[in-house]
Amino acid sequence: YELLMKQSRMNELFVPLFSKFYKEQKAEGGDIQSNTDIVEKLKPLPFMVSPLFWWSHKEREQVQGAGKVTNQYEVKMVLALALWILRNDKDTKISILSPYRAQVKAISDQLKNKAHELPP
Image 1: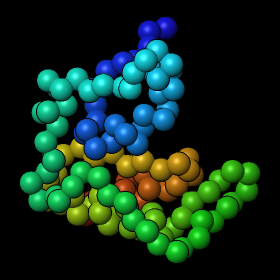
Image 2: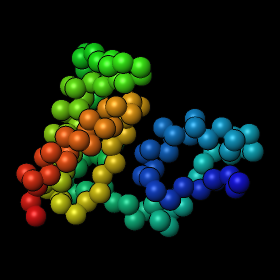
Image 3: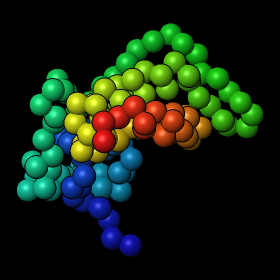
Image 4: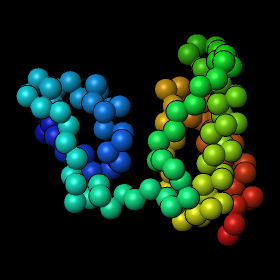
């Protein structure tokens, strides 16, 4: 396999968050770099303060069986933000990251259920 040394898919703000997953690059003497010719084209939406959001809350995760973890409060918050973004720019593509597979499914299912609320 070939070791990824340049990324072309994410805003520069995200690179430090994911650098810990690229331990092999560090072993070979470097951090992951961005393909600036491509990454510079990834402009934030004009109505957004930042392309990166962190939320803090005190709502607990719900565990449903073996490893099925969700947080319905987070699902609602993310859904509201995603719908707001899509209502303001229906052609944009967004990525929602979650460490829990069941939560990704819950968010995806909710977005599908709400798709009819978006402009055509």
